[in-house]
Length: 484
Image (tube, rainbow, N blue to C red):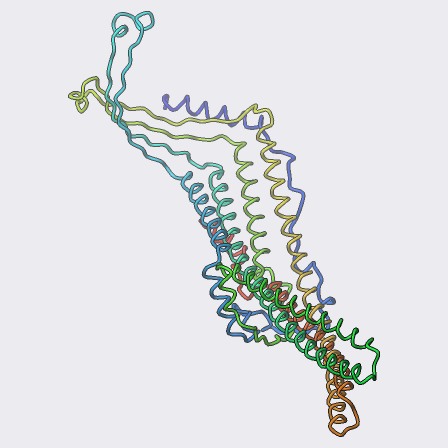
C-alpha cells in the first residue's frame, strides 16, 4: 500500500492539473448537407423515371458495339493510370496498418558488448581509470495503454483515408471508361464526317464536269466553274481534316488502353447504337451510395472527425508502460550466472500543462480539416446533382433537335428522289440532281453532329449516376470501423 502511494499521488496531481491545458470553446463550423435538401425534381421534369434506370456495371454495352466492349476490357486490365490509383490505395492501407500497430505492445531483443572507461576524477580509484567491458543480453517490452482513445482515433482516421482512396480507385476506373467512350463516340463522328466529305467531293466533281461542258459549249462564262472548284477544294480539305482527326483519336484511344500508337491503327469504324434516356426515380436517396466521389468525400469527413477526437485526447494524461529484463556481466562466462540478472521498468504518467498553445492550435487545425472535408462533401453533392440535371436536360434537348433534323432529312431525301425521277423522265437535268443533293448532305452533317452529342450526353448521364456500381455506403462502413 505504501509503495503505491507515490503513484496514486502522482496520478491525482496530474488529474488536478488537467484543467491547465483545455480544449474548451473550440468547435467545428460546417455541417453536412442532406441530399434531400438539394431539390432536383423540377429540373428533371419531363424525363422518364424508372427504378431500373440505374446504369449497369458494364453501362457502355448500351451502345451495342462489340469493339467498344473489347476496348473497355483491355483498358481496365492494362491502363497505367489505374495502377497509380491502386498504388495510392495500397499505400493508404499500409499507413492504416502502421496506425494500428501503434495500439499494440512492442517487444524487442538486443545483444550488446559495451566498453567504457570512467575518469578517476569522477569515479574514484575503485572503478575509474581502467577500461571495463560489459556483455548485455536484453528483452524489452513497451506498451502505451490507449486510455483516452487517441491511438484508436488516429487508426480510425487512417482507415477512413484508406477507404476514401479505395473509392477513388473505383472513380478512376469510371473516369477512364467514360473517357474511352467519349473518344470512341468522337471517332465515330470523325468517320461520318470523312464519309460525308467524300460524298461532297463526288458531288462537287460532278458539278465540275457539267461546268466544263457548259463552258466548252459556250453556255457559261466560267464563273460557276470557279465557284464549284472552290467548293471542291473545300470539300477535299474537310475530308483531309476528318482523316487527320481519325488518326488523332485512334492515338488517343491507344493511350487510354495503355498501348502504343500502332494499337490504334487496328480500331475499325465504330457501329454505335443510341441508348434511351431514363432517370432513376430514387435519385436523391440512392445517388449517395453510387457516386464514388460522394462516398470518398464522406469517408474523408469521417476521417477528419476522428482526427478531431485524436487532437482532443492529447489534452489528457498519457500512461506509458515499459519493462526491460536482461543479463549483464563483465565476462561472457558469467553472463548466464545467477548474479547477472538485470531488471528495469515501471509505469510513467505525463500530462501537458503549459505548452504555449500547441495543443489548441493542433485542435483548431483538425477542426479546420473537418470543415474543409465537410465543405468538399457538400460541394461534391451539389456538383453531382448538377451533372445529372445537365446530362438529362442536354439529352432531352438533343432528342428534340434530332427529331426535327430527321424530319428535315426525310423531306430533303424525298425531294432528292423526286428530282431523280424527274431526271429519268427528262424533266430535270443532272445539275438539278446535284443541287438537290447539297441540302441533303448538309442535313446529314448536322445529324451526325447531333447524334454524336446525344451519345456523349448518354455517357455524361451514366457517369453522373455513378457508372452502375453501388459503392459501399460510408455509414455502413463506419459502423464496421467503430465495432473494431
